[in-house]
Image (cartoon, rainbow, N blue to C red; front, side, top):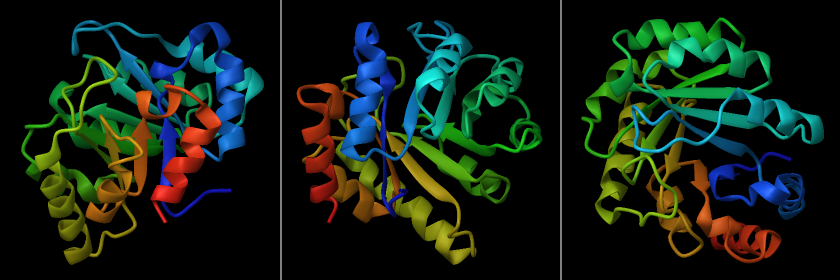
Length: 220
């Protein structure tokens, strides 16, 4: 069952040797979305995994998947992730020359389309693209590695985007926050206006089920 505030465990922090088990624990703990961070070593200084990961995930889970393309040429990989069953696909505004075209390309596969912004990319990029998005992903750490600390002054950034969406009748657009989200700050993130909270080490460090239960309770 989907919640008003959605928790999206980032599989980048999962135990790849026991990935099926970790995903089942996410389901048991009441997670809403599985988050995939796709990195190419060019757009960000790290390499993670590609479409084949989603292929195997789909063999043992039907949880909704959000694919975050932190790659230099996202348009080349959108079809594969769409065809393998990712319900949500986002790319970085900094990585493409034609944001509207890429958003429309994602939607042509019947998928939810979103843009992602690095921490100091002007929020106005999101304002201009918002009407073509289903969701907007705000990074609260510099992308590339898991386990980083949330940058506190980005609460105001989330609030600014939320206020813009409300003012312009775009409340249906979801705000996703990725980076440093943990049990102790998740309520502040959601209060600022985010309704999709991506958490990696905050969920996968320790007891996955209990961490999810604690995070859900903290959001009450």
